[in-house]
Each structure stands twice: as structure tokens, then as C-alpha cells.
Length: 387
Figure 1 (cartoon, rainbow, N blue to C red):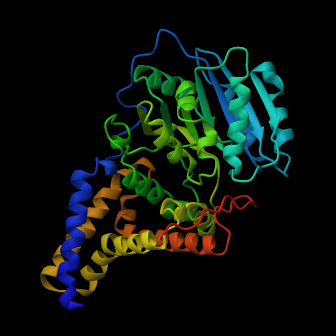
Figure 2: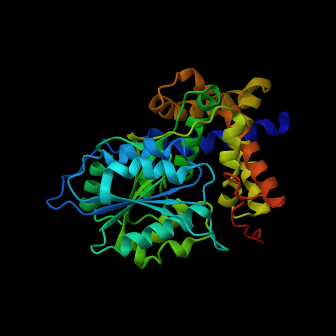
Figure 3: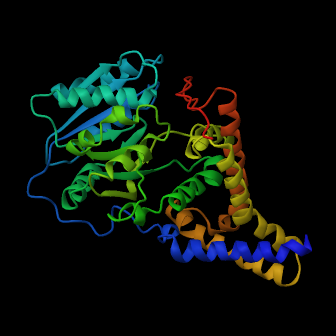
């Protein structure tokens, strides 16, 4: 170990120096909807919310109730598309919509065609309904049925979209962080997402980085049509970021953290979070064994080498490794603060990262077994692994 310890420790320290100084300040959590609020528009655009729902009977009523309580000055209508649920979601959605009159349509989705993921097929049907209306909306709010939004969420996002003439504006829903498993793993999920897609780069018009949070995304209808519509990404497992990449060719994006939009979905155990991550982690690597190997080696260097050398190494190697470990702990602090967790969790980031590496390997294993994208009892599209 001694012959390799110093180079590994110095490489890890250099990696964290780059991440802290030159990767868009992702770790600072500065891209938020409560910062730099734009002026409200003179004309509030019409919005249709499209809500795909599969087996969300225990959440859809609460989600729709919050959506219908938006203090939005413009026109807001809702299309809920039941994605072939078998738990009574359709009936619950109709009950929730009963008092809203014609503002809400609840649609029984058609059977899933080959080549489509369930969510995207439901969105396709909902968007078609919105476009077929007598007065098609200027924006489509693509919203998950397990999301609860505060009363000002849409108003805030629409004002930003209009001020920036955006093709898409989305808010990263604040995930539940109540169970022991959630407190250990959820803040790191957001941290890693921001590292992969620095929000400041997403929000910079000239930058190539594109990403979105699909749980609460406001999309300009004409931009979506120019990008090829939902059908252009029909088989995507990471649908929000795939759509963002297409839309950024047709206009700016904005993505930020928020306290106004929250996920209702609980993750009581580590296995629940593992399944959530494994559903799409290998798709992020384009189903490539080579990229899986490179990612595993990179995570081992960036996250695991430093604590190992800091504990078992000596001399310069130990001090460099300790500095790298300290740097990653410092980087993790703003995310912990956003989730109102103790700073004592920060030094544990390497061990949390090791768990996420295991989830990614499990994602590849599920793909090899023909169970890629397994979610709510349905295996999604299975692309071939890249060569």
C-alpha cells in the first residue's frame, strides 16, 4: 500500500480541489427558487398540469388537492392520466377532482405500447389532451402524482420561465428525510445529482449541461413541439434529463432547489432507496460495462481512497488523504444544512458513497437479468448495452 498511497492520496486531493473550485459551485446549493426572484409578468400564461399516475392511490388525492390550491393568477387546468393502475388510483383521482369541475380531467390511460416507458406514455396522452383543447396552454406543468406543492410554487416558477423566456424551468422536489435510511442516504442523492449536473451550468444558456427535475417541471408547449414532443424520448428511463437535453437546443433551462415542492413518497428502508437508484443508475451509464468500470474506479479514488489512507497510511500520504476527506466533508455540509441534518453526517460521505456504488452495481445486475427499470411491478424498455 505504501508505494501507491501517496499518489492515490494526492490524486484524491486534486480531485476534490477541482470539485470545490471548478465544478460550478454545485456543492454550495445556491441555485434556489427563493434567490434572485424575477419580476412578475404583466400577462400570466395559461398552464395545463399533466399528472401521470400509476398505483398512487395513497398519494394522488393529497397531490391534486395541493395543485388545485395554487395561488396562480393565470388559467390553470389539470389532466390526470391513470397509467393502468391496479390499486384504485383512477377512482381516487376522480374523487379528488369532483369539486374542481371542468378544470380537471381524469383520463384512463390506454395500454402501454412497445418501446415506451409507462410514465412517458401517460405524459404523451395528457399532452395530447391539452393540445386538443379549444385554447391550448402556453405551458405544460409535468408533475408527478407523489408531489405536494406549496401554494406559490407554480406562480414562482412561471414568473421565472416568462422572465427568462425559458424552454423549461423545474424545481428539484425536496425528498422525504424522516426514516433512518432516508437521513443516511437521501441528502447524498441530491449531492451526487448536483455534482453530475451542476445547476449553475444547467442554467447557463451557453453551457452544454442539461438536466431537469421531472417531478415539477414547467415546459413551454411550443418548445416541446419543436423538440419532437414526448414521443421523441419515448423509451428514456431518465426521462427528465433526456427531455432537458433536447429542449436546451430550443431555449434556456432553469433548475433549482426549493422548499415549496416536496415528495410524499416514503423510503422506510435502505432496500427502498436501493430500488429507486437501481431503476435508472445503469441507464445513466448508457448500459455500458466499460463506463460502469470507469465509474467504479473513479468513485473508489474520489470517495474511498482518502479515508482508507487517512486511517491506515503514514506520512505525506496520510496528511494528503486527511485533507481530501476534510474537503469532501466540507462540500457535503450545505446539502446537510438544506435537509436540516447535523454536520456530524459530513465525514460519513465516503461510506454513503460506497453504498451508492453498490446500488449502481445492482442496477447493472438487474439489467443483465432482464429487469432494467423495474418500478411498480413493470419492467421498462430494455436497450442493448453500448459497445
